[in-house]
Length: 190
Image (cartoon, helix red, strand yellow):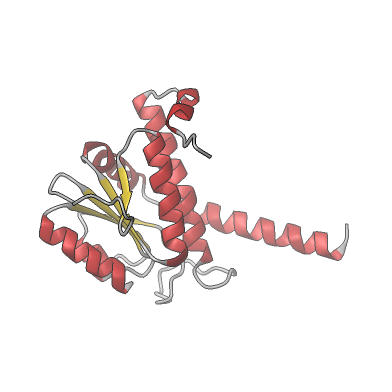
C-alpha cells in the first residue's frame, strides 16, 4: 500500500468513526418526537446556512420523496408558513444569525420549531418545541461537545446529512412504505 493509500484509509476510518460516535449519542426519544412532528405537520420548512443548509436541502428532498411536503426557506416557490406547519432549523451553535431570525418569525406565526444542533442552551434551542441534539463540536467549543480531528464543523454537517437519512428510513419502516415505489416521487425531468 502506498503512503497516499495509507493516508486515505486513515482519514476514511477517522471520519466514519467520528460520525458513528456522534450519531450513537443522539437520543432516540428526540428522534421519535421529531418524526411525530414531521408526520403531523401540514408542511415542513428548513433553514440553515452554508454546509448545514446543503445537508438540510438533502434532508428536505428525501422527506419529499416519502410524502412530506417540504420547502427550503428562501426558495422562490416557498409558500406562507402557518400554525399547522413546522420549521426545522439546522445550526450547530444555535446562534447563526439568519436561522435565529427565521426561527423568531416562525414563533411569531405560531408554527412549531425543531432545532437540530449541538448547543442545548442556544437562542434557537430556547425557542424550539424540540431540540434534536447532535453533540458535535461547533464554533463555540462548548465543554460537552465532542471534539473532532476534522476541520471546523465538518462532523456536524456530515452527521446532519446522515441523520436525515436515518429519520427517513425510520419513517419508511413506521409507515410501511414500499421503497421501490419511492422512485415515483423522484425528479424525472433530468
